[in-house]
Image (cartoon, rainbow over all chains, first blue to last red; front, side, top):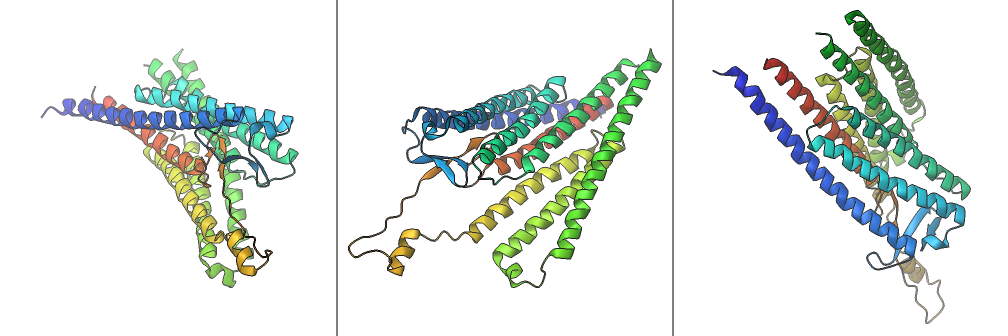
Length: 171
Length: 188
């Protein structure tokens, strides 16, 4: 029985599984990115080519037909929120590209995770600003907790990674 | 050299322990507050609780309580210094799954609660319109887009579903990574 030969095979199977799942997620993310970016550009330029009859929801009672109908301050915040959403999707894609490459616990993975946590909190802060300036507030605190917890878990993972690195040096 | 590295490891572990302890206490307080609030103030005998919406909201409440309990357990694992242990990753997986379940329950509750009365039909039925005129219902797709917050015209925020699925997926990747490391350590 060659016991040592079994684990690498198993490890390869595991890595392949991770790579396949990450590729699927990445492709889905790219699809959502394209749909989101198309909608955003259509709303921005007032086109109705792909999504006719749609509305932009800022809050429960403030729904706009076109981005240009918004007051300038609301428009600016909406613009930032959408660009942030797209940037976060790009970072999300980077994270899953690392997983696809078999890099699971590197400093970059943690950096991207942390970025996504901050993204969630900033997104919520923009929503808060948007809705409070319209005096039409209906927000849940869940994204803030989610963001804080992602940042926390990323920090713990980072510390764990550094400890492992130090222990590998201390042979 | 080795001593300084060991001490820095110890400092890191101590830092994790302290922060996890604080987080654990905070989550524990929120959990106790939620549990106490629901036990003291919920109208258990209310007939509204027996409606589908009431049952779904109760289910959502239970999911939230289990969610906080899982966070408590996760921080306890971190406090013990078990950062990449199987149990720790299992808690993260359960948290993601609970997120998805909560999203499903809330979405169902939303559709049960809002039976969507067509204004045109109700206005016609009530005879509120002048003779010769007829109300017409016009529906529009709404667009909501942000990071983990989008509906793409479906009226359902799909971000919650995606967030939960991603948490489960990342936890699964971490678990696979942990197993690979363990197997590599065995193959020396």
